[in-house]
Image 1 (cartoon, rainbow, N blue to C red):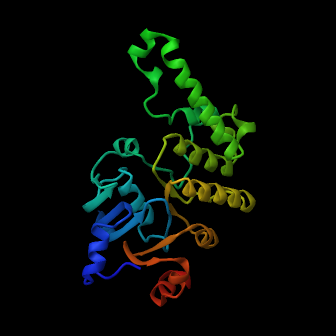
Image 2: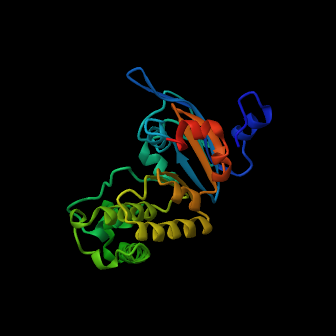
Image 3: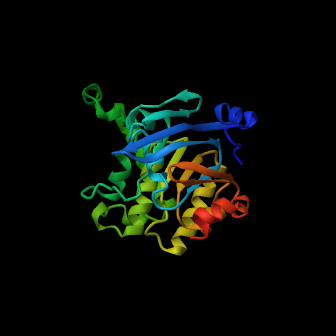
Length: 269
Protein backbone atom coordinates (compact mmCIF):
# COMPACT_ATOMS: atom_id res chain seq x y z
CA UNK A 1 0.00 0.00 0.00
CA UNK A 2 1.19 3.54 -0.62
CA UNK A 3 2.07 5.31 2.60
CA UNK A 4 0.62 8.67 3.46
CA UNK A 5 2.29 11.93 2.47
CA UNK A 6 3.54 12.23 6.04
CA UNK A 7 5.38 8.90 5.80
CA UNK A 8 8.94 9.69 4.66
CA UNK A 9 9.53 6.13 3.49
CA UNK A 10 6.36 6.18 1.43
CA UNK A 11 7.25 9.53 -0.12
CA UNK A 12 10.73 8.34 -1.05
CA UNK A 13 9.31 5.16 -2.56
CA UNK A 14 7.02 7.11 -4.88
CA UNK A 15 9.71 9.52 -6.01
CA UNK A 16 12.39 6.91 -6.61
CA UNK A 17 10.85 3.43 -6.76
CA UNK A 18 13.35 0.61 -7.13
CA UNK A 19 11.65 -1.02 -10.10
CA UNK A 20 9.19 1.65 -11.22
CA UNK A 21 8.87 2.29 -14.95
CA UNK A 22 6.00 4.80 -14.68
CA UNK A 23 5.42 7.39 -11.96
CA UNK A 24 2.51 9.77 -11.56
CA UNK A 25 3.47 12.59 -9.20
CA UNK A 26 0.80 14.85 -7.71
CA UNK A 27 -1.15 15.35 -10.94
CA UNK A 28 -3.81 18.07 -10.99
CA UNK A 29 -6.25 18.95 -13.75
CA UNK A 30 -9.24 21.28 -13.68
CA UNK A 31 -11.95 21.64 -16.30
CA UNK A 32 -13.92 24.85 -15.88
CA UNK A 33 -13.40 24.88 -12.13
CA UNK A 34 -14.15 21.16 -11.74
CA UNK A 35 -11.25 19.24 -10.16
CA UNK A 36 -10.92 16.18 -12.41
CA UNK A 37 -7.59 15.34 -10.77
CA UNK A 38 -6.67 16.69 -7.35
CA UNK A 39 -3.19 15.41 -6.60
CA UNK A 40 -3.07 11.83 -7.92
CA UNK A 41 0.18 9.95 -7.21
CA UNK A 42 1.24 6.35 -7.72
CA UNK A 43 3.88 4.30 -9.49
CA UNK A 44 3.90 1.21 -11.67
CA UNK A 45 6.52 -1.51 -11.47
CA UNK A 46 8.01 -2.86 -14.67
CA UNK A 47 6.60 -6.15 -15.94
CA UNK A 48 3.35 -5.96 -13.97
CA UNK A 49 -0.34 -5.42 -14.63
CA UNK A 50 -1.81 -2.52 -12.66
CA UNK A 51 -5.56 -2.00 -12.46
CA UNK A 52 -6.99 1.49 -12.10
CA UNK A 53 -10.46 1.38 -10.58
CA UNK A 54 -12.95 3.76 -8.99
CA UNK A 55 -16.46 5.13 -9.40
CA UNK A 56 -17.50 7.10 -12.47
CA UNK A 57 -16.03 10.59 -12.28
CA UNK A 58 -13.07 9.47 -10.17
CA UNK A 59 -10.61 10.79 -12.77
CA UNK A 60 -9.36 7.50 -14.23
CA UNK A 61 -9.70 8.34 -17.93
CA UNK A 62 -8.47 11.88 -17.32
CA UNK A 63 -5.36 10.44 -15.70
CA UNK A 64 -4.76 8.15 -18.70
CA UNK A 65 -5.17 11.14 -21.01
CA UNK A 66 -2.57 13.11 -19.06
CA UNK A 67 -0.08 10.25 -18.84
CA UNK A 68 -0.34 9.53 -22.57
CA UNK A 69 -0.01 13.18 -23.62
CA UNK A 70 -3.51 13.69 -25.01
CA UNK A 71 -4.27 16.29 -22.33
CA UNK A 72 -1.70 18.55 -20.59
CA UNK A 73 -1.74 18.49 -16.78
CA UNK A 74 -2.42 21.60 -14.74
CA UNK A 75 0.47 20.67 -12.46
CA UNK A 76 2.42 17.63 -11.34
CA UNK A 77 4.73 15.26 -13.17
CA UNK A 78 4.67 12.12 -15.28
CA UNK A 79 7.96 10.20 -15.23
CA UNK A 80 8.49 7.32 -17.65
CA UNK A 81 11.58 5.12 -17.38
CA UNK A 82 13.36 7.83 -15.39
CA UNK A 83 12.50 10.62 -17.87
CA UNK A 84 10.15 13.51 -17.12
CA UNK A 85 7.64 13.39 -19.99
CA UNK A 86 5.23 15.94 -18.54
CA UNK A 87 3.81 18.04 -21.37
CA UNK A 88 5.19 15.85 -24.15
CA UNK A 89 2.82 15.32 -27.07
CA UNK A 90 0.99 12.03 -27.49
CA UNK A 91 3.10 11.33 -30.58
CA UNK A 92 6.35 11.84 -28.69
CA UNK A 93 5.23 9.67 -25.80
CA UNK A 94 4.11 6.84 -28.09
CA UNK A 95 7.51 6.88 -29.78
CA UNK A 96 9.13 6.41 -26.37
CA UNK A 97 7.15 3.19 -25.94
CA UNK A 98 4.13 4.27 -23.88
CA UNK A 99 1.03 3.51 -25.98
CA UNK A 100 -2.67 3.74 -25.08
CA UNK A 101 -6.06 2.58 -26.29
CA UNK A 102 -9.32 4.47 -25.90
CA UNK A 103 -12.56 3.93 -24.03
CA UNK A 104 -14.41 4.09 -27.34
CA UNK A 105 -12.94 2.15 -30.24
CA UNK A 106 -11.24 4.39 -32.82
CA UNK A 107 -10.61 2.16 -35.82
CA UNK A 108 -10.16 3.53 -39.34
CA UNK A 109 -13.55 2.62 -40.78
CA UNK A 110 -12.51 2.61 -44.47
CA UNK A 111 -9.28 0.69 -44.03
CA UNK A 112 -9.16 -3.08 -43.82
CA UNK A 113 -8.33 -4.76 -40.55
CA UNK A 114 -4.74 -5.49 -41.56
CA UNK A 115 -4.32 -1.98 -42.95
CA UNK A 116 -5.49 -0.63 -39.57
CA UNK A 117 -2.65 -2.50 -37.90
CA UNK A 118 -0.06 -1.37 -40.44
CA UNK A 119 -0.87 2.30 -39.79
CA UNK A 120 0.61 1.86 -36.31
CA UNK A 121 4.05 0.64 -37.45
CA UNK A 122 6.61 3.21 -36.25
CA UNK A 123 9.29 4.61 -38.56
CA UNK A 124 8.01 2.91 -41.69
CA UNK A 125 10.91 2.63 -44.08
CA UNK A 126 8.92 3.28 -47.24
CA UNK A 127 7.16 6.46 -46.05
CA UNK A 128 9.77 9.02 -47.11
CA UNK A 129 10.64 10.61 -50.44
CA UNK A 130 14.15 9.18 -50.17
CA UNK A 131 12.73 5.68 -49.74
CA UNK A 132 10.55 6.13 -52.82
CA UNK A 133 13.59 7.19 -54.83
CA UNK A 134 15.57 4.18 -53.64
CA UNK A 135 12.86 1.81 -54.85
CA UNK A 136 11.11 -1.26 -53.55
CA UNK A 137 14.29 -3.14 -52.76
CA UNK A 138 14.98 -0.59 -50.00
CA UNK A 139 11.67 -0.92 -48.15
CA UNK A 140 9.99 -4.15 -49.30
CA UNK A 141 11.58 -6.44 -46.69
CA UNK A 142 10.59 -4.14 -43.81
CA UNK A 143 7.06 -4.01 -45.19
CA UNK A 144 6.88 -7.79 -45.42
CA UNK A 145 8.08 -8.08 -41.83
CA UNK A 146 5.40 -5.63 -40.69
CA UNK A 147 2.68 -7.57 -42.50
CA UNK A 148 3.90 -10.82 -40.93
CA UNK A 149 3.87 -9.22 -37.48
CA UNK A 150 0.38 -7.83 -38.06
CA UNK A 151 -0.87 -11.30 -39.03
CA UNK A 152 0.72 -12.72 -35.90
CA UNK A 153 -1.38 -10.36 -33.77
CA UNK A 154 -4.49 -11.07 -35.84
CA UNK A 155 -3.98 -14.75 -35.12
CA UNK A 156 -3.36 -14.11 -31.44
CA UNK A 157 -6.61 -12.14 -31.13
CA UNK A 158 -8.71 -14.41 -33.35
CA UNK A 159 -9.05 -11.86 -36.17
CA UNK A 160 -7.36 -13.76 -38.99
CA UNK A 161 -10.63 -14.51 -40.77
CA UNK A 162 -11.57 -10.81 -40.92
CA UNK A 163 -8.25 -9.27 -41.95
CA UNK A 164 -9.67 -8.12 -45.31
CA UNK A 165 -12.88 -6.65 -43.88
CA UNK A 166 -13.17 -2.90 -43.41
CA UNK A 167 -12.94 -1.62 -39.86
CA UNK A 168 -16.55 -0.42 -40.06
CA UNK A 169 -17.75 -3.98 -40.68
CA UNK A 170 -16.47 -5.41 -37.41
CA UNK A 171 -18.56 -6.12 -34.33
CA UNK A 172 -18.03 -4.07 -31.19
CA UNK A 173 -15.92 -6.79 -29.60
CA UNK A 174 -13.81 -7.22 -32.74
CA UNK A 175 -13.18 -3.47 -32.88
CA UNK A 176 -11.91 -3.60 -29.29
CA UNK A 177 -9.54 -6.44 -30.17
CA UNK A 178 -8.39 -4.58 -33.27
CA UNK A 179 -7.54 -1.53 -31.20
CA UNK A 180 -5.46 -3.54 -28.74
CA UNK A 181 -3.68 -5.31 -31.62
CA UNK A 182 -2.95 -1.98 -33.29
CA UNK A 183 -1.50 -0.59 -30.06
CA UNK A 184 0.83 -3.59 -29.87
CA UNK A 185 2.09 -2.87 -33.38
CA UNK A 186 3.70 0.25 -31.91
CA UNK A 187 6.05 -2.01 -29.89
CA UNK A 188 5.11 -0.53 -26.50
CA UNK A 189 6.98 -1.12 -23.28
CA UNK A 190 4.00 0.20 -21.33
CA UNK A 191 0.46 -0.38 -22.60
CA UNK A 192 -2.38 1.79 -21.24
CA UNK A 193 -5.79 0.19 -21.78
CA UNK A 194 -8.97 2.16 -21.16
CA UNK A 195 -11.77 -0.37 -20.49
CA UNK A 196 -10.37 -3.12 -22.75
CA UNK A 197 -13.24 -5.52 -22.03
CA UNK A 198 -16.07 -3.14 -22.93
CA UNK A 199 -18.22 -4.74 -25.63
CA UNK A 200 -16.31 -8.04 -25.53
CA UNK A 201 -18.32 -11.17 -24.77
CA UNK A 202 -17.34 -13.08 -21.60
CA UNK A 203 -15.75 -16.03 -23.40
CA UNK A 204 -13.61 -13.80 -25.59
CA UNK A 205 -12.81 -11.57 -22.62
CA UNK A 206 -11.22 -14.55 -20.85
CA UNK A 207 -9.09 -15.18 -23.92
CA UNK A 208 -7.99 -11.54 -23.91
CA UNK A 209 -7.10 -11.88 -20.24
CA UNK A 210 -4.85 -14.80 -21.16
CA UNK A 211 -3.19 -12.71 -23.87
CA UNK A 212 -2.58 -9.79 -21.52
CA UNK A 213 -1.19 -12.14 -18.90
CA UNK A 214 1.16 -13.64 -21.50
CA UNK A 215 2.30 -10.16 -22.57
CA UNK A 216 3.06 -9.36 -18.93
CA UNK A 217 5.04 -12.57 -18.60
CA UNK A 218 7.00 -11.57 -21.72
CA UNK A 219 8.04 -8.37 -19.94
CA UNK A 220 5.41 -5.82 -20.97
CA UNK A 221 3.98 -3.43 -18.39
CA UNK A 222 0.22 -2.91 -18.56
CA UNK A 223 -2.02 -0.35 -16.88
CA UNK A 224 -5.74 -0.85 -17.39
CA UNK A 225 -8.85 1.07 -16.43
CA UNK A 226 -11.65 -1.43 -15.92
CA UNK A 227 -14.99 -1.77 -14.11
CA UNK A 228 -15.16 -5.57 -14.36
CA UNK A 229 -13.90 -6.56 -10.91
CA UNK A 230 -13.53 -10.22 -11.84
CA UNK A 231 -11.02 -9.33 -14.56
CA UNK A 232 -9.18 -6.98 -12.20
CA UNK A 233 -8.98 -9.72 -9.56
CA UNK A 234 -7.69 -12.35 -11.99
CA UNK A 235 -5.24 -10.14 -13.88
CA UNK A 236 -3.77 -7.42 -11.74
CA UNK A 237 -0.66 -7.56 -9.59
CA UNK A 238 -1.53 -4.17 -8.10
CA UNK A 239 -4.79 -2.25 -7.92
CA UNK A 240 -4.96 1.55 -7.60
CA UNK A 241 -8.28 2.91 -6.35
CA UNK A 242 -9.24 6.46 -7.32
CA UNK A 243 -11.98 8.66 -5.89
CA UNK A 244 -12.64 12.38 -6.36
CA UNK A 245 -9.54 12.86 -8.50
CA UNK A 246 -7.00 11.37 -6.13
CA UNK A 247 -5.60 7.98 -5.15
CA UNK A 248 -7.55 6.47 -2.28
CA UNK A 249 -5.59 3.23 -1.88
CA UNK A 250 -3.16 0.87 -3.58
CA UNK A 251 -2.41 -2.81 -3.08
CA UNK A 252 -3.49 -6.29 -4.06
CA UNK A 253 -7.18 -6.90 -4.66
CA UNK A 254 -7.32 -8.83 -1.39
CA UNK A 255 -5.91 -5.82 0.46
CA UNK A 256 -8.30 -3.48 -1.33
CA UNK A 257 -11.30 -5.54 -0.23
CA UNK A 258 -10.17 -5.22 3.38
CA UNK A 259 -9.93 -1.42 3.15
CA UNK A 260 -13.16 -0.05 4.63
CA UNK A 261 -12.63 3.39 3.09
CA UNK A 262 -12.48 1.79 -0.37
CA UNK A 263 -15.50 -0.40 0.32
CA UNK A 264 -17.52 2.62 1.40
CA UNK A 265 -16.41 4.78 -1.55
CA UNK A 266 -16.60 2.24 -4.33
CA UNK A 267 -16.93 -1.50 -3.84
CA UNK A 268 -20.12 -1.33 -1.79
CA UNK A 269 -21.76 0.79 -4.48
